[in-house]
Length: 102
Length: 172
Image (tube, rainbow over all chains, first blue to last red; front, top):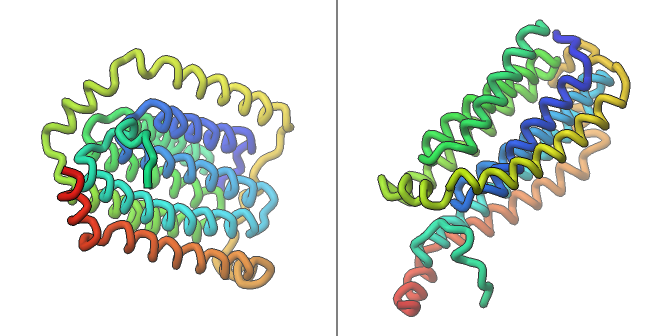
């Protein structure tokens, strides 16, 4: 098993999170925005697992399982919303649905 | 084993960078799968084999495949590439990248000041994770079940066609 300095692993999680954040900010296609959010969830889970490895306790891995569950539920609803948006507005542009009305 | 961590880290960063910059959704998803596999390998060498398996099964196996199905159902074809090219001029990347880099720099500064701790290098067996999950964290499991139920109901309601079709004809 690897004994890497903790900050290397946490910095990796930070880099992945920053990449996901850039994706959310830059892309206009909602599919890519959802994909970038998944990258951010994954990096947060990586930080938890690194902490679990640092203290050799299972709690971080438990938190990763919760993040995984939340990501699965979020992506199911998000993709259903994307399908709805594509059927109703015939576009995947996030700017096209800037007006909310019932 | 440390070299496995660093090689996987480089692969994960490159694959993620490719995933968020590709124009075709399917190419982005394939790069995301590579990134998730690399992170699963990192989990394994950090001593979390159960989480590594979950990463492959749930993230790469279920979530990304859900994305693939939706991309297939959207049936975007060649038009999406031209659309993405129009939406993503090079200058659109500048400001968000700088902002994310500044935040990353701050996070990196804080992490590096936090001292020279290393990961312990001991594996945590699945039974320990399970004992914690169904012991002190049982309330979280219950709440997750409610969240998943809400997700199922929400996704089912949103994806239903019978209330979707009349609205489309109404809009036109």
